Image 1 (cartoon, rainbow, N blue to C red):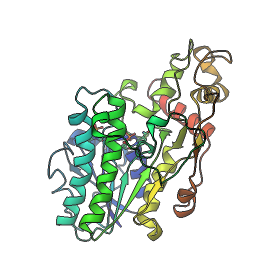
Image 2 (spheres, rainbow, N blue to C red; image 1 turned 135 degrees about the vertical axis):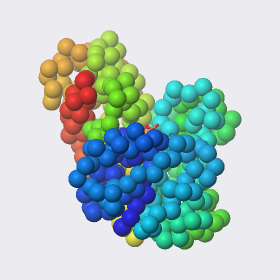
Image 3 (cartoon, helix red, strand yellow; image 1 turned 30 degrees about the vertical axis):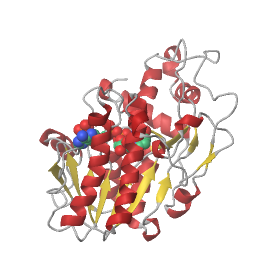
Length: 339
Ligand code: NDP
């Protein structure tokens, strides 16, 4: 089929793009500049313009940003919307996090409804941020699933960037489901809700400083930043980026995925376990890594929430990669950019 993929320059989208192309889908991906398009094109030089093409969308927060991108010849069958800011380096939560997430999501749905009647499936990258209740802490007696929604409010959202990011994903996903309910579009929506995403980088990176947010803890351990104390793990659930990318593609290929939300997680991890895997698989980093007695980075003594990932395993057919495989491949990819 012919697929529009937004945010093709990103960590996760680069893997979605690879799987789409491997499966024979024809892809147009949006990026913010011609320079970014050229980098992706260079990395996929065996695919002609009919297989891989580009549309420039500079800012998804602009009203009508996707009006042109959704129109193509031949027309699109499916859209995968991954573009959304994921970093905490903001001074204005509303403008820098909430607007691109929410206006980006509702904007693309409106553009599709208005101008791309052949689109049957839309997959949106949401997050565990829209599932978790951040006010409940580790909540050991609770099992998170697709039934849970983050109760965060607009007032709490603008209090700090961490709240802002989680709210951006919550409000954007809610807006998507509200759109489906009110507008009754011609297409189905599926949302992917991953917790921390780890795994090899395949997108173009200017430097290690530009590494995507979720892989930074792996880089930081390799660079010796956990020697005195390991940073708190924060969220204790993770997924490998390749399994998440496979979930996105399975959701446009499988009828049963239509109009469902998916909690896409492989299970538990801690920062301490990441350090242990790096040492096991890459002993040359031993001197930079924490030792068995270094404090921090562990699970909380009271335990953590449970998770239910059955829907994703069963409906999308995902087999989960192990933390060891994921971290080993992440380290290898970071070595290639100078870690
Ligand atoms: P990246 O930062 O690598 O990718 C984000 C992408 O969104 C980039 O292509 C970026 O473009 C684009 N983007 C951000 N803001 C705008 C904007 N205003 N206008 C146009 N494009 C924009 O992060 P990930 O790959 O990790 O994130 C992809 C998606 O996955 C996001 O929706 C994120 O919320 C979600 N997610 C990620 C998790 C993780 O642990 N990595 C966990 C849960 C959800 P550019 O690079 O040019 O700025």
